[in-house]
Structures are given as C-alpha cells and as structure tokens.
Image (tube, rainbow, N blue to C red; front, side, top):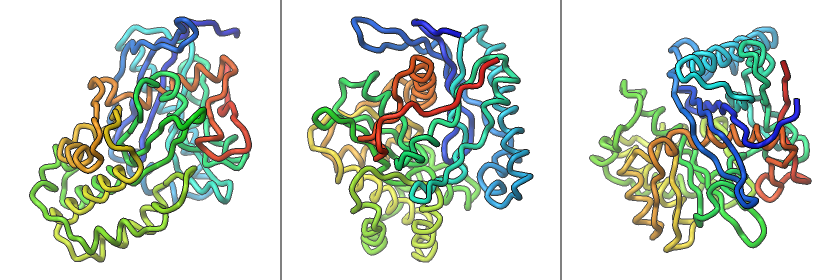
Length: 354
C-alpha cells in the first residue's frame, strides 16, 4: 500500500499508570512544507479492574508462556476498543499506531518490551498497524524514549518548551539545531500510588496536597537522587520509582497530606531546574488538570505555563503516536538521536499489513 497525504491515523496510548486507553484519530497533512493536523475524534476507555491489575503488577511475574499469551490477548483487546471507537465515530482511518504498555524499560541492558501485539490489532481491526516504536532505538544504543519530541518539534514548534505531565513529566525543546528531551521526574505514577492506599484514584484538583506542609528533609532527599544530576539523554521507568522513590517515601513517616505536598514541591522544583525563566511552556497530560501542581510549577519556574485545549491536554500523546505512525509509512525518522542518545536518527516500529 502506498500512502499519500492527507493521511488519517488512529493513535493508541496507554500511560504508566495503566488506568485507561486513550484513542485519538487525526488527519495529518502539510501546508507550505510544514506538518499540520486536525483531531477528528478522541475517546478514553477505562481499563477493567482485572486487566489493569495484570498490566500493572501481574505481568512482571508471568512465565514466558503466560507473557506471550497475554501480549497477544492485550493486542486483541486494543483492536476491539478501536473497533468500538470506529463504530461510535463512523471514521474509517487508513492506519493505526499503537504505543502499547511499557512492561520492562532497561535501556542500558538493551531490554525493553511494549506489550500489546500489533499483529493482533491489525487482525482484529483489518487496518494496517504500526507498533513497537522503541525497540530499534534501544538496539542502536538509545533510551528508546521519549518519543513524543518529534511531534513537539514538527507540530508545536512555536513554544519554547513542551511539557507533558502524566505518570512521569517529560519536556522537550530546541537547542540550536537539535531537539533535546528527557524525563524530568515521576509525577502521577507516584501521586496516584499513594492516593490508592487511602481508597482514592487520584488527588483531584490537588485538594489533599493543598492541606499539607512541605517536609524539607524528605524534599532534600528526593532532590538528591542521582538521576536528577545526570545529563540528558535520560529516561525513567517504573522500576526506578519502585527502587528509589517508594522506599524513600514509605520510610519518611509523613502523613498522607504532608507526603503529597512534599512530593508536589519536588516535582515543581525539578521543573524549575531545567527551564529558563520567562519562557512559554505548552502543558499537556493528566497532570495539567491539577491546578495546585500547575500553580506551584508556574511560581517556581517563573515561566508562562499555557494549558492546551482539554482535547489536547488529554490526548496529545495519543495524537503524537498517530503522527509517529504517519512518519513511519512516509519513511521519515521518528526517533531523534539528540533526544534518545542513539547512534543515529531512526524510523522505529513494525508495520503489520492486512
């Protein structure tokens, strides 16, 4: 199949917190040589409790046989959700691009896996599917992450910085002719973990944290973690959180409100460390709805934090994965060595045709 612009693609994104599947269908085209997009429809599908349990916890302990079976089953699940989405919207895209769900992320060991078989998605939907975007970059010595910066560069280049606040916060920006990007710190992956311990899914609007006080000793310990002093390119995975953040906070002795308030301060301080004052920052991701966190970040960074439309806030990563699928079939690089540290720019992914 030969692809020409404009091209309509569905992007699938499941974040580190594995609470829902984001589906975004967008049309991509060029005007005067510059990439443009239009979001045609977007939906979020909450995961059933048992599937979330398997994605977040059980998959790490599965046997090889169980793991491969789940990889296939989760791919079929993704394909079924796409079919539901297309039935609801009446859209007929030419392509699907799936992020999958990150199970292992140890770039130094050249180990990673994005669960959710692209072949199963293509088989269930009957639509060509691109998946497994990270693997080639890691084999080329890169971090395999972040992948969103190519979209930031080509679709949102008018901003000084693009900041996404999800399970982790990540940022991208131009430095000369290069695009620089890296994970700043864990955010919702940590906040939601502690909220679930008291029967809440999240700290809605930052209400709990707003009632707490910062503990300077714990804050200093968080800020002293070695990741923050390392140069980019660098990326975070949940293994790092479980080995470093959770033990530190679990043994802090803080009540929940003080723990969350201290962690918010940590996230805001880490952002302030990496941006230049008076810059314009596009903010997206679920954390953009947490105004207590956003206000603290804006105050400490001395920057102008610009919230996208609600659709862009909630679906920017799914939108950009759709864009990565388009770049793949147009034979254009999607992984930038200046971002990931790989030997060369590369076209990550595998295409399953039907």
